[in-house]
Image (cartoon, rainbow, N blue to C red; front, side, top):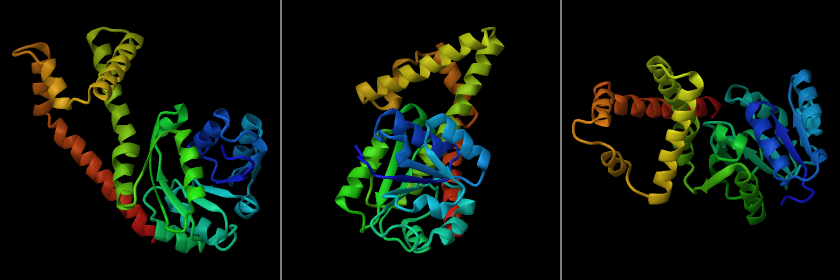
Length: 274
């Protein structure tokens, strides 16, 4: 647990709210008043206050005063101005955790003039405690701060630490943007079911359970997906003709290109901040 450490969220948007909600629901943070969120929209602040009984402010500098952990949860496009405002304002002993896509640890350290920075890349599944987060820390992050980072991220789902920050951009493309690709595939499957004559509810239930079961099978058997695919593909069978259509449509190439393009965009966003 984090004890009585005060946590400041800079940005009260969707991802920031998801993380904050998980910290409270899992009792990682036992007292709502230990959390303060800064957001430029007064209406957003009011919503968060009513929903979670936390403290809010529209002033970033006010939010970080006395905070032991500062979580940067803003869009990359506004990060430069936010860092300029917070430069030299964060307590020297505080830990900064960034969930801003594409922005490197050196850029964050320099922009804030603060040495202890953890860069993370969570995905939207943190909302239900099944998120996937890859993270990396600057050399100034202490063992206690690394422990605090793990406690926070484990409340969100599975966490993976890496010493090579380069993997964070890859994680953004594969794990974070990847959720959007998966939702599109799910949507297409459901639409196909409706086109065949199933109700939308029936098609959705069948699709979701099919995907969830397939994932669980891989997790438990540790078999290569090609091995499992071959097990359900009979010569001249239903699966075989469907797979042929997917291959003919270039499904592998399209998915690969989507991930690689997402990686390129992630790196581009980071370069714009550096």
